[in-house]
Image (cartoon, rainbow, N blue to C red; front, side, top):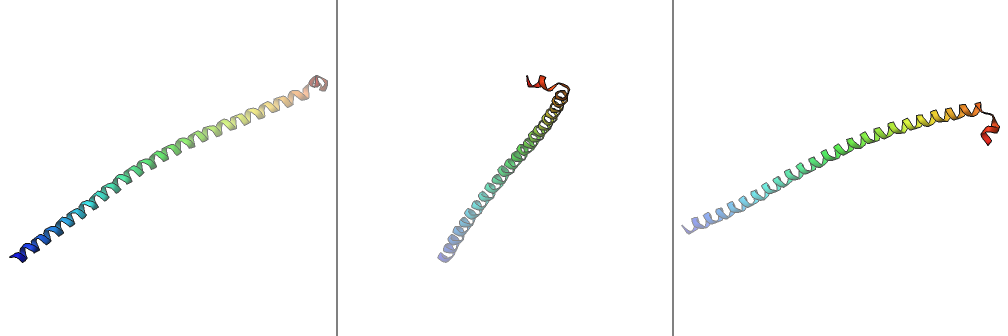
Length: 92
């Protein structure tokens, strides 16, 4: 009978150890899921920010091109009027 009680106690201790190990594994799984969720959210935020930056870059490139064209037009006008005026007028 004592042997059965010892075996029962041993089995009970082993069951408690297994339950604790299972709980630790479940905690790790929950932590990994939460970490994955957080990282997915961060990735989405970085993707959104990258899209905004691309849009800003595109707008800045358009403004740059417009300013280049405006400067070119003004240079052509200056050169056109410079050829129309006598040289002595331009010097003074």
